[in-house]
Each structure stands twice: as structure tokens, then as C-alpha cells.
Image (cartoon, rainbow, N blue to C red):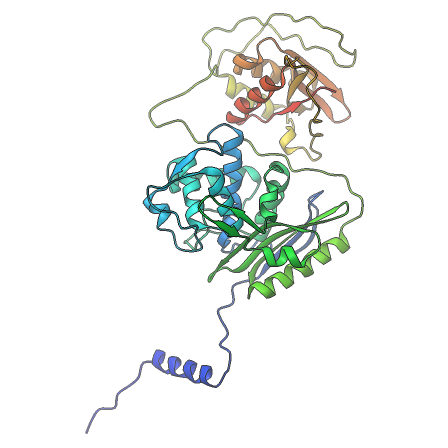
Length: 450
């Protein structure tokens, strides 16, 4: 008697699937978990949330962080838009969607940025990360540092492109936060996300989000994403009149259904958002540039062996309500950076970056003179007492002698506390001083002439 052959269960499932297809019965694909978030972009107020803090696969929404860091690196002089990036074998081997880069090829950073933003090219995203940090692993570490600085507390990045990888997760809330920072921290690049097509150097690429851009009134970005594990994701922003709304969807079933859901959420956002609201831009994060090379310690006036008495500086035509701070003769002779952080903690001071109401942004004006008049300054925080502000000003001056030497240290009292300012700088010097302080995790912003 012949033994009966037992078919594995998977063969039976395969046969059943083939029968369904032959009969025209649709086979339902794996459904990724759904999450959504809607905010008023002007104020950051949450207008709708569903599973907003569930950690899910972000797919190519990841590239928003890759691009954010690229913009940050250009701003801080790490790399330029015209830098010719050499494409590695690793970048060239990334699966589609891709630009089609070849190993050993050189291409300007600006074209890699366009390809990543518009076409969502994986090879371009990897090349950007390697160009800035030397390797994709090092770039992923910087992505995580930047995410933490932005308040994206439930996000962990493992790569620059967003292809599915164990532990590479984010949330609808965190990606909405990132989209809002892209909009306000780097407005000069935001137009990239609304281009229907653009030149990426070696070819013209089309926008993966062009259907929503064409179909929804006021839509102007930001980024799509798709993998089998993630489903169809999208962070979208739209502006109508004085109102701007950002909506995020994770786990869409298809491009069409995702776009329909995002349109529904944007409509909900415009319905719930007030017509008039005070613009409260998110505070930019502390600069997260890469650490110095291994085995080499770089200190720029952060430790002194001898403390000098600061010289008194004259008051020149200053209003009476903006006194010049005269530094104390007593100087703590240990590491200046540690003392600065300690002063901020001891006083319970609220820095500008974490203030409930961020300070007004510097007004953009034309140059008062071609010689670079000293009409600019920087602010290094708002404090609960005049003593705390004076203490931080003194220690910051000693920590950054190269750019703050010759400036006027001022404490300005207002209804929210005591502002610690350095005045009497050129615009270039103020920008440089802020970048150097941010590199030491010290929050500051420039003050323009008024």
C-alpha cells in the first residue's frame, strides 16, 4: 500500500490564492498599522491625533532628517552645495527608488539633495550621509543626535534612506515635528518639496508627491514614503490665506487612499485652525555637527590656566533701561563650559530654545553700511535673575574670547525675565559667534539692528 503524500500547508495556501486570482477575487495585501497627526503649523497646536506616538516604520520620511542635516551642514560650513561628492560602492548599490549613480562617479551635493527630496532616491540619500559624516553608520548616529535635539523622543534611525531595518522606527508625532522644523528652520530650501520635477544633474526627476500637489489646493510639500512594512506614508503641508496646516499619515493602503486620507485631514485642520493666531516658530536645535577625529582633542578657549580681570567697557548712547553689565572680578578657575552649564542649572534659567514663548526672530534689514557696522549682537538666554544673566555673560565671554572680545555685555530686563546679550558686533561676527557657541551646545540667536 502506497503511503499517502501529505502536502505542506503552504502549498494549499498557494493553490487557494491562484484560484482566487483566476476567479478575479482581489487578494488583500498586508495592512501596515495606521497613525495620523494634524497640527497648526503656525503655533504647533495639535488639531488631531490617532496612534500618534506608536513607533512605526517611517520609510522614506526618513529622508526629511537626511535633508535637514544636509541643510544644517551647508549652513555651518561643513560642506557646500557645489561640493563634488564621490559616490561609494555602497551608495551605488542601494535598491530603487534611485537616481542611478555609479560607483566612483562625482556629482554636486545640490543634485543629491534634489534627488533625495523630489524623487526620494535611496542612492542619493546614502551618498549625502557618507559625504557629511564619512560613513552611513556615523551619519545615522548624527541623525539620532539631531532627532533628540529636535524633541523627537520616539525616533531611532539606522540609515539615511528609510528602507526597512530592525529598530529603524519613528512616530507620526515625531515626523510632524520634523516637517515643521524643515518648514521654519530652512525656508530657503522648502521650495524643493513642491517642485513637480527638477534637474538632478544626470537626469530630470519627477516628484513622488505630485498627485497631491496637483489635486489639493494650497499643498506645497513635504515628503512621501513607502515600504511593504510601512505602507504608504506622507507628511504634507498646505497653506490657505494666513493658515498653514501639517498632516501626517502612516500606514496608507495605496497612494490614492493615502492621498485621500491626507486631504481629509488637511480639511479637518483648516476647519479647526483659527483664522488668526500668533506665529510661534519652533526653536532651532543645538548644532549637532560631528565630533573631532578620534585621538585628537580640540579645545577653543574652553579651559584657562589664568583668569584675567575683564576690562570695564564704556556705555555709548545706550538707553537707561538697558544697563551694561560690569563683570565681577572674581572668576571661577575651572572649566568654563562646565561653569556655564552649572550656572544655567542652579538658577533654573529658561533658555531661549526651551522657552514657552520663543523670542521674536531677528528682523531682516539691509546693511546699514558696506563696511559692516557694529550694529548686531547675540542673545545667549533668558534668566530668572540679573545675577544669573550676568554670570552667564561673563563665563560665555571667557569661553568664546575669539569672537566676543570687544563686545558689550548687557542684561536687558523685560516682562519675561532678564535677557543676556552681547552687543556691538558686525553681522558676520555675530553669526560666527553663534555657530561656535552652538557647537558647544550653548543656545544663542543673533540680534539685528533696529
